[in-house]
Image 1 (cartoon, one colour):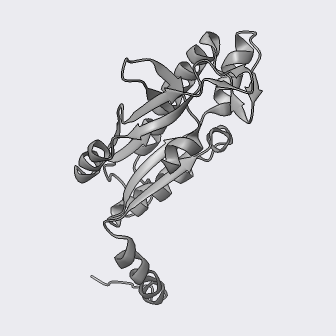
Image 2 (spheres, rainbow, N blue to C red):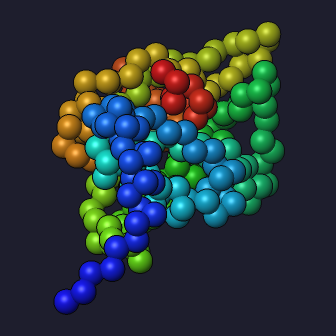
Length: 195
């Protein structure tokens, strides 16, 4: 049995090994805009993140969904409204956001379920777990504009997220948070990812 070894791999591996060593065991929060998902970038991103996770980096993935919510609103004949760069989330927009988040969660879980086809990691298992890790509060009134069901991150359950990461799973966060009374708030992906 003969073994063919590509010697260009060794210098490449030597060049990346310090980065693998440095980041192994660290947590990487990745925000992916809804526009990137709509543009068909999800599968490549899933493969890249699965590879990074296999090197011992813990991943928290936060997805956006602005174009998906806007499309749901368009289909319902409802106008998307913004103020101060933030969506004004009325009841219809909240329903559309919940539908879009559910669909995107399904698509993201499916993308990670495919593993890394045509690579040595084909068949690798990547578990994606979501949960109610975000507590939110309403934006309220700003310059006379009622933001209704638009919210801001109040608290992140970092212990719950860490326990999930410790199980070897990737954490998926949608741009939603819930008040202590269970009220849902539409958040921005950026607010969730940076909190």
